[in-house]
Length: 212
Image (cartoon, rainbow, N blue to C red; front, side, top):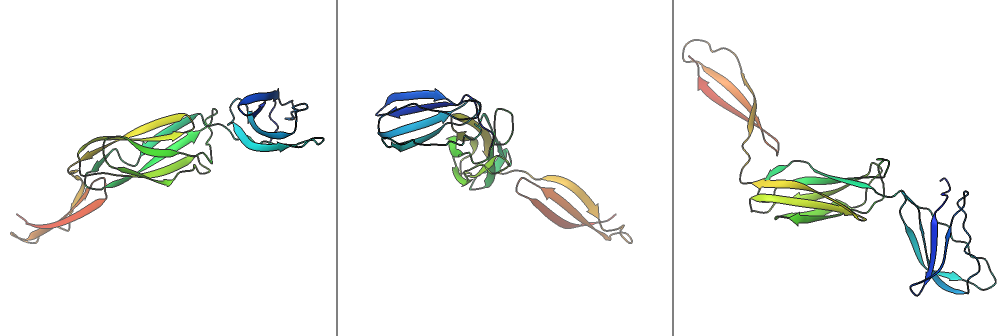
């Protein structure tokens, strides 16, 4: 990884700042002489996440080396749902959070907390850490109550949410109708196949009607 110039390194003890220095062009910092003891040390830089280590021991008469590897900070979080409307009575849909950095590149390894922000139902996290593509996932399960619901996702100080409506029944939409062939003679039957689809899947219905 490339060195970070201008990273701010802060050394504290018992809540007081002992030293605060910046890294040079090579990413190197020097605190100067401090007394032996145990310290908390943090490093931060613009567009990067802050890293903190606690209980760092400093020994008298010896140099202490502490290296930091700062990850790219999350700057945006977008939350989506597999569908915007589902049936009540324990139907499910996937909720996804997409986390990106200030340059709109995916952030991997970010911890995302999903929770029910409003309404009813339950939220169960399936993948709470963003993958290489920047995504984390949860499952929303509806209750037996009809209405508007909202699921939120939070990482660091970033929060966003998605709305999911629950209804009694989702009417299927007819997407195709076909017959087997022309009937032979009066009173012969058509075989009509109707493909209807809803948010859950596809239902095929076949029926027989008399020809003319």
